[in-house]
Image (cartoon, rainbow, N blue to C red):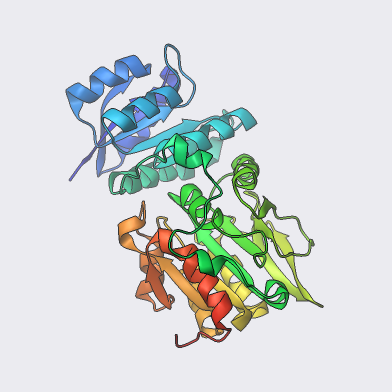
Length: 361
């Protein structure tokens, strides 16, 4: 089945470029374009597209305002097209919070040879969006209440001995839909959590904004990882968009290691790089969670973690925006458990309290 795409962008050049790329793919077609949200609204009614690509900054109505109205009145898969600026990244994170499936940074004028890779990325994100499970935006009243306790699991929040805070490590990997999934995992966790290391597929400018957003919502502290820094309890370390993140054991714990080596599974940072290092350096002391995302990045790394004695969990299909990475992990036997997103924080906490060796749990 051909994926019907509507392109909304105020730039004639971007509309032409996106249309050419999309129409070149055998399984998708641009059924129309719009220069602003007002025009896009009419084209959606007329053409009934499967996926909308939406510019963030446009005349007459911002992409964010239009997205908020669209997801309330006529929910559909949306891929945001964002500028690589601090302001653009903050706005894009807001769009993901409102229900956009994914985003794509606008290409630089001097992209040159990178255009083919960019075109491939556009098409992959549209394919994923066409199959995505739309997520209801979190009501403002609920956001205001964060950080919130784990409903039905309050007893799991307390009583973690200081020794376990120092000796355990949690590793998380995600891609499409992962910004909100990671938020849902981290916000219930108490300030006395063990250290957490994370990979979310996104460009460099966006990881900094994402870490700051999480830090403002969570009881734990969240920051971008720095090369050589020691991981500490009560902190979550996010791989910066320019480098792979790994850990290395040192006396009394672990330190972060960053590398700009070649992409793995076409990603840098890659979840597999982090998970393999956690398997090697933390073994039975680690817990791993693989969340929503397209592709297979992280599956083999999570399997290595399980073989090393770590307890592992994959997000279930019903709660994934895109059931790709967790499906691949489950298919190779990497997940000890498969769980709905809302249950993963409590499962992690329960396993922290329950002991260490979960190889056959």
